[in-house]
Amino acid sequence: MAVNLQEKKSIKNCEILIVGAGFSGVYQLFRLREEGFDVHLVEAGAGLGGIWHWNCYPGARVDTHCQIYQFSRKDLWEGWNWSERFPGWSEMRDYFDYVDEKLDLSKDVSLNTRVEAAKFNEAQGRWILETDSEFDFEATYIIVCAGFASKPYIPNLPGLEDFSGPAHHTALWPQEGIDFTGKKIGVVGTGASGIQVAQEASKVASELVVFQRTPNMFLPMGQEQYSEEDNIKMKSELPAHFEARKDSFGGFDFTFDPKSALEVSETEREETYEKLWEAGGFKFWLGVYGDIYTDEAANRTAYDFWKKKTRERINNPKLAEVLAPSEPPHPYGVKRPSLEQWFFEIFNQDNVELVNLREERIDRVLPHGIKTIKREFNLDVIALATGFDAVTGGLTSINLIGTDGVPLKEKWSKGVRTHLGLATANFPNMLMSYGPQAPTGFCNGPSSAEYQGECIIDMLKHLRSSGFSKFDVMPEYEEKWRNHIIDIASKTLFPKANSWYMGANIPGKTKEILMYPAGLPSYLEEVKEAASKNYEGFKFS
Image 1 (cartoon, rainbow, N blue to C red):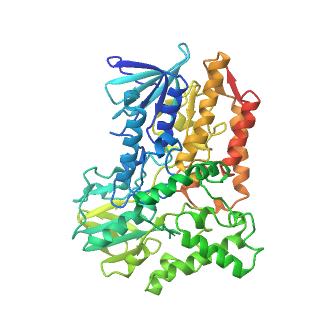
Image 2 (cartoon, helix red, strand yellow):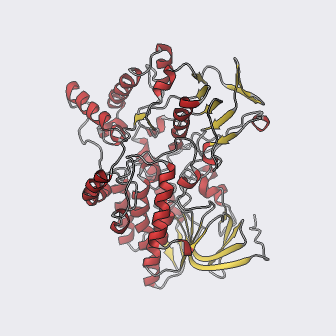
Image 3 (spheres, rainbow, N blue to C red):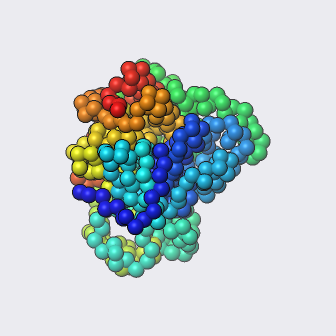
């Protein structure tokens, strides 16, 4: 498959081209500039922020406490105040605008520029990239920072194109918004975006219908509003919190309890769970006993506590069984839990209905609503909270052509191959940040942007100081890395769920662990060890 580069278009040249303007891409931009590289960034959206440019649906907000959901540079955090513990999408956009202004990023950024195809010219030792804008690009190196949730997945729903009202995937929500007031709203899916939309719709919609396939083990957000005094206090603590990230499994400022859930008394375990639950956020996910991810009996103690706390909030016993089943649909925590604020209470309202798709699947979309195999629902708006072709989709949606002529999408069609989650064979001089077989979705985004980001920057500095201009991956090392990751995952409970962590949410996608499952500290040690051996697994020229 050839890359159809349009000769009539002007070409912009740089040493390093970054694709994507989320936390990872922005970090690469300002750090590589500091290191003296000639660098440029292209972004498909109309502003910086990555997911926080695209996610503007009602209720969209961060699921990591703001304290560490920001860059750790003092010259950035000391002048910025947060309004709440878990900021909404609008505040996140303001934050990226602030970072842009402080670091003068826009001069090296091309917005509204989507990379559609790219191929490495071996004779020139350069990547040639075709975009949908007036310029194409050439670069010695490319760093793809597409993010783990940049390719929305819309299932095959017969009749969807015939729906007479607005019907949008949450990641493709109209920037001008949609007014739910007095309307009949259908929300398909109960992942993070689904519950956020449902919570907001429940307040103003005349009717809200939530279509659930698999119960989601939501956790209480514990939202708080912050004053200026709160921000002052928080800033005094920030250096210690930032420092703690590198020692945490998920790049947070807390990590697992080293004790077993089964070695402590039931009283101590309940007290621990209660304390973590009351703390809000991800504490009851990434601060619990570590063996709940490897031992089913330990895991069941966490699920039973979650079920008890959740059912207390649902008035109807039949609904409680659908939302928090007696038997877990999968082990607790092996799907990313979403944070909710009043989600379970909405089902106590007269204007909200839950449809269990396990019992009545969607038959088709009608011009006026959705028809299941049992009944019809009249709707004015449909929100498709149906997830993403996660982790790999952002990369494979670009027509990246390897030096062997094989597109990346085809290469990975039978399973992902990378070395250290940084690069893949036959795609020389291409690096990936926050992509497959790296900590990524298991890790706080800004933490990954900085820690994995420095691994990328160190490697580029090594190339420069050694006089090299080209690298590639030895195929045997990507097989070794793949097998290593699969082996780690096989000792956990993650493969027991059909999650996007495993690629199981996309029909036809290989079911495999898509991210490095041993945690950020172990990952950094792996990269450090390879670097100490002259970047073992890479070949330079």
